[in-house]
Length: 205
Image (cartoon, rainbow, N blue to C red; front, top):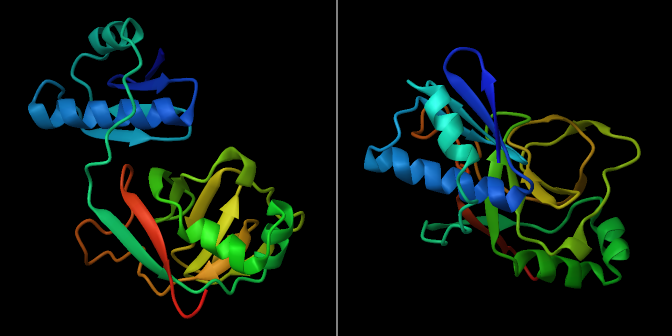
């Protein structure tokens, strides 16, 4: 691990993989809950974890950089199920990349348990991991100017659900009516880092 100072009271901890970032995030959340870590925000990303609001960032930098990367977290959190219609305009493209039929592509995706690795891009947008590496797909050569809210999409190793209409270049494989972001809800985001997610097909998919 490498810890980089950010301002006066924050650290950006760099690790070598998304799995290590998820594991470190889980350990830091647990330490904050136990009271051994006082920090305002713990924010994971693809290969980093930001600790914002540390009272003694130098001490934590020394401790983290001499620590062993933790084991991957156990899946103790409640499973979130998202109903999905596998009707996306890019489902045939994804199936072709995978070398399977559209129905089989839907079955592969729905048969995977995902983990929210981190959030970003838009409020409520989670980057979900879980598909084996062989199912990684490229972004579209030409992004769409408007992707509808609820679109279930793939890009690289990630699955995501667009919480609102926005431009986007991911491959669209389905749609869900789940509300990903609601500012009147606590927490406002349905999908938060570390959450377990499954997509439940609607109809005969």
